Image (cartoon, rainbow, N blue to C red; front, side, top):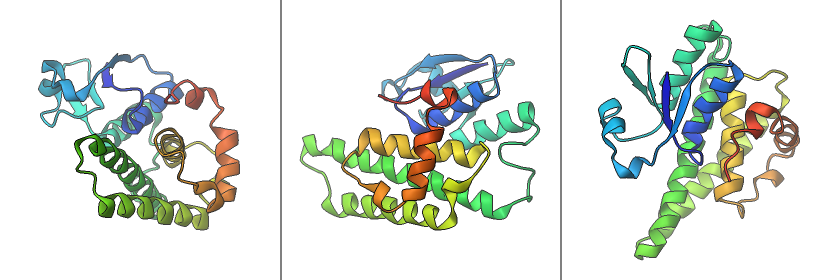
Length: 197
């Protein structure tokens, strides 16, 4: 298998963590999606990463689709759980993924500043979504988990990305228990080896 990915991307990172966690043989190819390379566009017409090419040449894209595929085919659904087994956990994963979306969109707004078109409205909206969502994860006890599953992996991707791209966003005050958990778990090899920056 071959994975088109980018080290700073939290979406790519989730898949890269799962690959390492499951000890899979996957060739990782650093890819800039803005280059619109032929291979990426052939695999994903949206021109987005990550994109996983299977051994038969077929391509899978979207981090969640790839992650669930790897979980079902190589981990017997241990990372996401069997379909319908824990709706609360599935909802929590969606919240974390939505927060990653907000963090990436906030970064995109920051990049638009050079063009003079950064929107204060959208900047504030994404920041507030991040803070509300992280506060909700704290309320749900997201930092109390004892095992590494897909939600834990996505949460590490989110928090590391916020620290990497939005260091002024002081989320730790809102989520002290989550922050303690994060400081411990982020040093595990699968996370340390894939950390952006």
